[in-house]
Amino acid sequence: MRILIAEDDRIIGDGLNRSLRQTGYAVDWVTNGIDADNALTTGTYDLVILDIGLPRMSGLDVLRRLRA
Image (cartoon, rainbow, N blue to C red; front, side):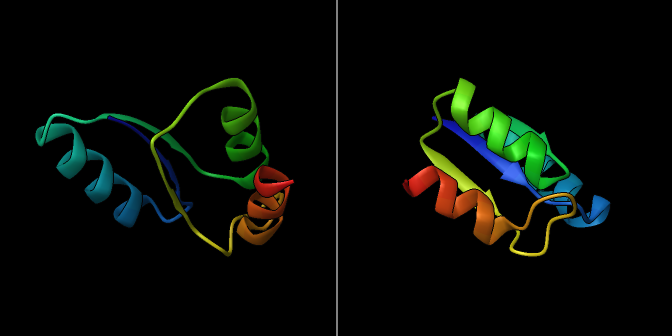
């Protein structure tokens, strides 16, 4: 299973990233909305953990673009 974490808080992102990788998941971690949008348009993910308050593009805008 491939997971995208879109989280700008380093402590939260690092904790999620480490925990999911230790469990055996393939994880990509981005820290802003533009990078999240790019990752979702160029890659395939089974799950997205999306922070709503991302810099550069809000998580809600990323979600809207993904659903469009």
